[in-house]
Image: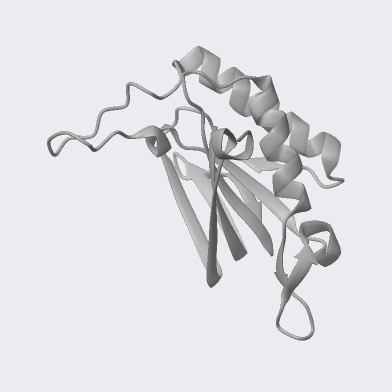
Length: 151
């Protein structure tokens, strides 16, 4: 699994002109599921995400976690994180998880977050054409790949 984590002052996702998820300060997380990913990948990334200390403290140092600032999470499925652009000009998505498997793992990842964190996870709609808006703070963006964390 791959995550793109963006520290935001606010973020929202719309599907067919309806807001399906919105947050104030916290994380906008783009979630990509690969064909070889498992529940253990989801669990590993959920724990890592909740434990990250990437919010600034009073001294401007990144010492605070999501819980420390009372932040929120907006999770959006993003199969294009598995784009393979190594050949030609058109991306291939052969490494992305099959839709049924990817949806189940994305939902499992979100449930892991909700078990670890007291606030509900806001989401988009898996597989839908979504419009994502955000006010990125910093900008501060982190890339996490479960394969890297397992090494």
